[in-house]
Length: 413
Ligand code: LLP
Image 1 (cartoon, rainbow, N blue to C red):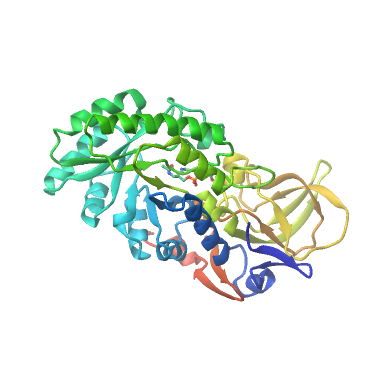
Image 2: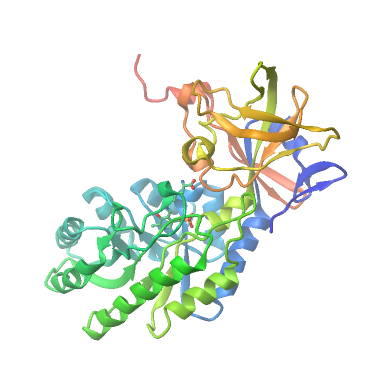
């Protein structure tokens, strides 16, 4: 469910016609719906009901301050993977005591900053990282709260680039080594074991792999508790998928049922790290048609969104629906919609049937709220897009379009 729909042939975000935003701010521009963001957060919260849980929004999906602030105000915590993300969370008014820190390459400096900030827990991904965290804790005279991220070796059945739970992946500690590491950690004065963590991948559209992974990890949680480790948190990661085209991922209710059933009798407070499901369908990317180009082989539509603005199609062959902002009658023709970046993979949509647009027409790239702006770059020296948040009939710019001067900030010629 989202709040982008047509009224009298024009696509609106809530009550705001998208052409009004494009006129005022230009293109490309990311547009988010506050009502959709809030609703998604509430749906996940309600699905888990009274069961003790904490939603730690996965900052990497969309790390824009206004988005973070919205989830902080809704009572959410955060899942971070860098010192930069920690700084963003704090800048947006997020609570470090509700923040968990994952990632295979945390630096001692990042660990120190997070520990000083009063983080909820570190999700540790290797034996050497655990030793480093212990050293940082001892140096600061504190015990760093940690969970081991275990690799449950489950096939998440998602795109190979975003699957993380197989034993060949770089993420997590091998399942079999976990007990030994928790036992060793008891003697380490800079550490305190508070939880257990896993995450098997992203854009998951089936319940079975989630059930398999969480059941396995819940079993480990129970036996660690029996061995006297004072764990309180079972972190099940993120990964719930969304509909880009015709996928039918589990609803938040189904997801909650699967998770609660698989983790029952652990007595743990559940930590969830949803990213995409909260923000993905809450955002669109507005783009304008620059040129139409016919070659003997194909028809191309060149738009002003490039792979630097939205890299998912180029990187994962991801499908994003394209909607004309103003509906037009006509017979669809098959076109490749391409961006201006000088790379053959800068293709937003391949062999897509659309009514051939006029120059200057606006399109909305749908489901662009997750891993859109947060993965944008300035490749080809293209300033990154502006971002707008719509709230009912009102809207505001939450990030100005980058300027060309921003492109060389810090450089010395
Ligand atoms: N927790 C951990 C430890 C993660 O690694 C991730 C995502 C999440 C939570 C959030 O997952 P989500 O609920 O959003 O699926 N750039 C890719 C997705 C990469 C996901 C990386 N990890 C894409 O555009 O599809």
